[in-house]
Length: 127
Image (tube, rainbow, N blue to C red; front, side):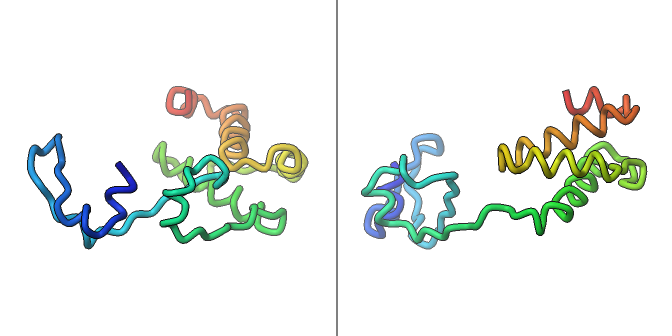
């Protein structure tokens, strides 16, 4: 289905079975994201502009940790100053980062630390 949407002729008269009508989607742009391009079928990949993003380096890890704490605090309606990580906790996060290099894993680790820091309010929200 994606291939047809990326072809100008087909996308001008796209039939949407849910809406049960034809649509002109020729002016639409699509954005895809993937951890790897290996599993993307060649015909689809040939129609995409691939932009490689570098891995998050240790240089930016402190900022990501701070932003994640702000986001998670905001999600539960608490001031981010309610939570802080000490230098040893941040060191552990950085050490673990070298092993997994996964933002989702890092976020879960930060959530775990926030919950462990006597933040019982968050347990129902994160679990």
